[in-house]
Amino acid sequence: MKIFIIGLFAVDRLLKLHFVSTGTYILNRGIAFGVISANPELVIVSHFLLTSLLIYYLYKTRLDNLAKNSIFLIISGSISNLIDRFMYNGVVDYISLWIFPKFNLADIMVVLGVLLLIFLELNEYYKNVQSRRNRRG
Image (cartoon, rainbow, N blue to C red):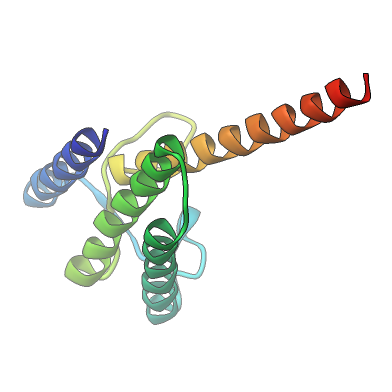
């Protein structure tokens, strides 16, 4: 799974290079939907700190493989967008769907990782509730 995630990271980097070279992208200087775009330094520092904390959490906690992979997915997408912030002073967005603001593959990786973590937590909660019910009889 990690090789697949690294492959997604590489594809995102290559797509960003392509779209920057052709000029068919937008630059998001803020976070989601351009929020806090007036203070790019704050965005870069917070992005770097959150990514660093996720890396620390990944390597210092005991998690099952699926949870590790979901966090690795988030970290990989985050690092790709962080590279953009240093290279272009904003995130290169190149995917356009009619009802959403532009986004990129790294954003998809982050969202999928977060959704997977939410699913894993809800599943664990459900198992714990069922276990308590079964013990009561």
